[in-house]
Structure formats: structure tokens, C-alpha cells
Length: 288
Length: 144
Image (cartoon, rainbow over all chains, first blue to last red; front, side):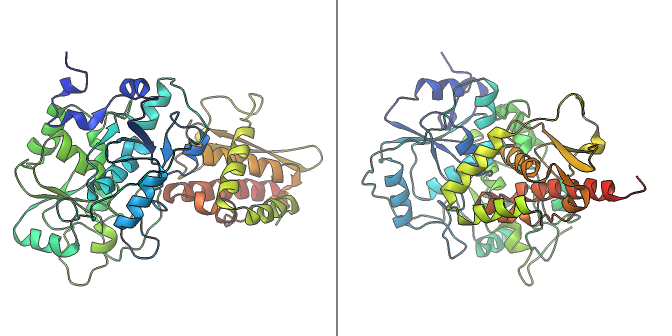
């Protein structure tokens, strides 16, 4: 019998797991839960029992250059959390899994495809009254041998975006409508992180990331609802090359996940330079 | 800077990141919500902290001895940082004369939270301090 997630018609339903599934696998040694949040205090305040914390700034980003960790850094991270190539990593977090999807995306740069997202994230787990713990689990270190980071399939750099523009490829701007229109230079209630110009990349469709979510419980909308949002209302084709962007590539990781795994877009990349890069570049096209 | 708050900031400066996280959680656990004698739900929006995604509220009541007592509510169950800051402000500022509280600057947020401050949270937490400062300034005005 199909699970409730399978009944939603996703292209790759195995990329999502329910809170029930996670609860049933809390003691499964082949599963490692990773909590990734924007608020760094949340994990310490109580997490899914057995979950480890992966912080997007200190664990996933290079601490000097604006880039992600290297192969050696990823191997060290996986060793630290006790993961092997066969470990199924399940990501969850605050903000409707916004940071969980970001971590998931970074893990895919290194080809750890045994990865899933817990539908609904932290909020759903708590709303359902499930157990939490403040105990930080200790896992035996592993020897994890990673492939080199492989950016091109799922990550776009500015030159890729410029080439994509010339080919009139599909672009999705997942920021707020005000950021898209250039009337606001940052997210509502967030600081301005220094883009000199407002607006959007020419031709980008405006589809704020949270539209993919059911606001009540943070779960992803059904495939039919997502198809209507992305393919019908915004005329995006699953067969077309697609680049998603936001401010630094975190919100667009969430949209990248929805397009690639839930709707089956065949070639979708995340432009993590996003508006903090594009809005500062000299002589690149911008629309308002 | 009020002495108790300065002492607390000095203590936080000595902590490593893990200790700072533990201490912030400890304060969050000590958070006490505004009593019904001061305010009940739905809390008036006039006391809501703008820009705070944790849906925080602040009140200040002048005591017979002329000092101020601060009260807070944090409606977002995930508002751990807001609860920690509220508990810190209550612990270090309540019971002081309003003009003393009015000297507190929102820069204390960075000094206390350091690596535990996230992009969105920083704005909201600084807005909490600004709200406390505004109430203290208003209470410092003898015309009121």
C-alpha cells in the first residue's frame, strides 16, 4: 500500500520521509538524523533523539572563501557524525526545512545520494508532541572516503547564469515579491546584506519558496499543487534547464529540492551566489 | 551600562561557544511569562516588539519605589533566543530606575549572543532591547 507521501504523486517520493518513519527509525544504525537550523540555539534546546547538529555556517561553508567545504572537509564532517557511504542521512530543521534542504543540497555536491528530508521538519515533529532530547549523541568516528565535490550538475556560478540567460533558460527567483520587484533589498525583518542594486535577473519567474509548503504543518504540497504553481501558473517546463536563486542560495535550495525531487525537473541548478552576488556585479543585466 | 548587565556581558565574553550556548539555554529555561495581572492574551499589539519573528511583547511597570519592573511574553514556541534575552534583561534590569535602563544599547545583543546570533534573530533581538529602552525612556519622563 502506498504511503501518504507516495500518494502525493511526487517524481521521487523516496527523497521525503514522514515524521512517523523517522520515529520508527530512531534506533536504526543505518540512519543518521541531521538537524540544520537558522537559529543555532534550537538544536541545543531539544532535538529529535539521536540527531546530530550540522550548522550551515561553521560545518558546510569554507571559513575563508565564499564557498563550500572541500572534499577533505566533507570527509571530516561525515567521519565526525559517524556516517558511512551506506548511511541514510535524514535532514530536518526549522523554517520549513529551509536549512535542511540547503544541507541536503551541499551533501549532493559530494554525491551522498542516500539522503532524505523529513517532511514538515522540526515544527511538525514538535506539533505532533514527539519526543525531543538535549543529549548530544556520540558516534564512533568513521573512515568516509568522498568523491571530489562535483558542482556543475546542481550548482550554477555567475558565468553559468550569464550563459543560461543567453540561451533564455528558465530562472526562478524564490525571494519575496518585494525583493523580486527591487522595492526591498533584503528579506522582511532581515538585515540588508549589501546588494548595491535591487531587482531580479531578467526573465526570472517570481515564485517565493514558501509557496511550496503547507503553512499549517510545514509539509510539501502535493505534486498536483506544485505542478499548478510552477508549471501552469509560471510556465516552467520540467524538461527545461532551470536555475533557482534567492539571496545566498539557501531559500533556493528548498525550491531546488521541490523541483528536482518532487516534480522531477531533469536539470535544475542552484545559483548560490544569488542576489548578494548578482546585485553587486558590474554590468550584468537586471530587471525591475 | 547597568552594573549587573555589564557583569553578565563580561561573563559571556569569557565563555567558549559551547558554554555560551549552555548559558543562553539556561536563561531561556528560566524565562517567566508576563503574569495575568499585567497582561492577558490576546496581548495588545502596542506592546509587540516590531521585527521580532518570535512574536515577543514587552511591558514596563513603575514600582512604588520609582524603579521599573520588566515583563515579557514570547509567543513563538521556537523563540529560544528571545526567551533567553528576555530572561537576561529581566534579571539584570528589573528593579533599576528607569533612566538607568534607558542607557542600555542594542549592541549588547552581539556581545551576548556572538555566534549564536542568526541573521533574522539579530534584528528581532535588537528590537527587543530597543523596545525596553523606549519604555524606560518614556517612564523616565516626569510628565508621564
